[in-house]
Length: 235
Image (tube, rainbow, N blue to C red; front, side, top):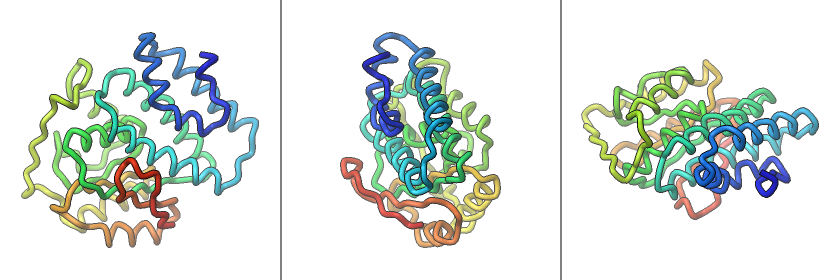
């Protein structure tokens, strides 16, 4: 683990692909995640981080989650364990210090990448809001526990997004006010939120951004290619 030891808290986010690759190579679903969780706990116990840096870290974590999904080729148990433990621990640490994240994603996203993105956020404990009807009506409010159960419900084996196909009936898309109501419910429960539009079949961004601006959340818009590291800060 020495070569994987973070030198700074941002390394935990910056090296997600490296950690998961090492977990996969060594078939380790315990020691690497536990070591990183311990590092997160000790870091925030020993270092007083100012609010702006915490907000920047939250933005970095949210955006890195999407960018990892945009480049990843598989969602296996190692990936689920990392996001379900390490990313969750980091989100918990940020929220414990008063930083709540609202990540708005508006890109042309391939269906398998779209599902990967949803599942990585969901298993991390981030509430996902999207206008599209997905498996078992994933446009209803779910608790963190229900989200994790939903991610694991695809099958009992490693999930291969390259073989995944999703049928979306546009007649089942949520209407504008239904999306806003769901976002407001997530905010009422003080959940970190990821709002995702994967194509131009719907466009509720004006209202979603308005809600973001009026909220206490750290809010950003990602509407650039995943290779571009920049996002637009809303609030």
